Length: 480
Image (cartoon, rainbow, N blue to C red; front, side, top):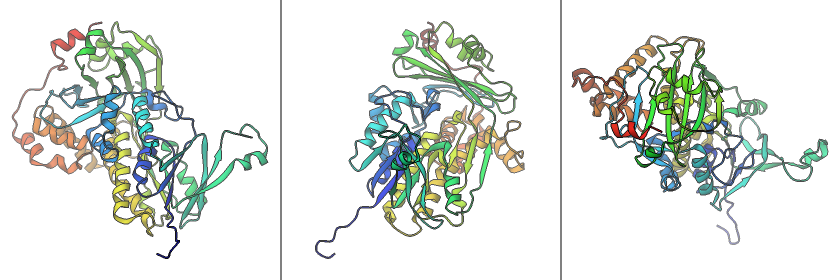
């Protein structure tokens, strides 16, 4: 290098300070100076924010996500736990009924630990950790308008500041004054389900993107409750009644004990059986699930606030990795690639695993290699595809969920998964294999391993449980 030559550090722009955007910024910071562009003003602590309406509902992070969290940001899970989150043993700390109406035994022989807390707490700890990095700059209240570049290469993103002088004016001159272009070696779209990437790419002359939607018509209703006094001291388990796709409408619910001595209770129903925001109907809906355990736990508890409802729960995927001519310098991650029915709890895990795929690919190639964006997009598609297959494998069975009914192979695989669930409910080896797949730690081929097939074919044939496996101590503690 000649004397006096300065090597420019690469730059990246991440659109969206979502969990996906923050994980992506953390992954990129070792390779570039990162600017995060966020439309909203972020809260200072664990509080709701406008851009994450689904945050009010029950959230958990599967063990595959817990591992990815700590691989990206060592100690992150411990920080969340220190602020009130819990690492719970799945299935030992969970009372759960499968979609095929089989109750799982509470095995404690697997390594799987899921992270449980409010989404507000998780986002707050994650924001504080990522934005403390001096290599990462946050631009709040700033809207990403369009990509800069052409169909072969994205060179930056056009932004508009939504605060400051002239922000409330309508004059074109004031609007133009608030716009500028951020040049970048890589632009990452982490703007979630509302991503405008297909439109942006079309405007550059890039090919259109294939999309698929599987919509079971699920609606959610969530309410917070004050936990019973006695339940606060015994690590009360998660309680989950999953909907059965063989029945229409499908109805289910979950009780999630979280920080602050609270329970998040989320109820769900498909077309014709949706829960509502009616406060007088909430407990009755829970009592009328195929098993009334959730409703029985809620009787007499003090509700905290009103009911929050959501209907935007379709599984929707955009196959960016299949675009033949993908522009250099652009990458789409997380929910902007695929959004899932929240009942499966995979969104946060996929967000972290996508960021890990980015970090690992960059570690091998660096940021400024030709064709890098295409390799990154394909790497990010792998965790997306794993979660997608699990979600649509169930949701596609609901009437009206997709334009075409599942084909013979898909129906056969669905029956095999039902058999795997039934086997896992009674056998710890099979349960470990099932959880490896459900947690996104291992590919679906794990279900065809001896750990699953031998118990499936040979037993032991332990009888199914006839009801929810709550202990006497837990039942007593749940009494208000």
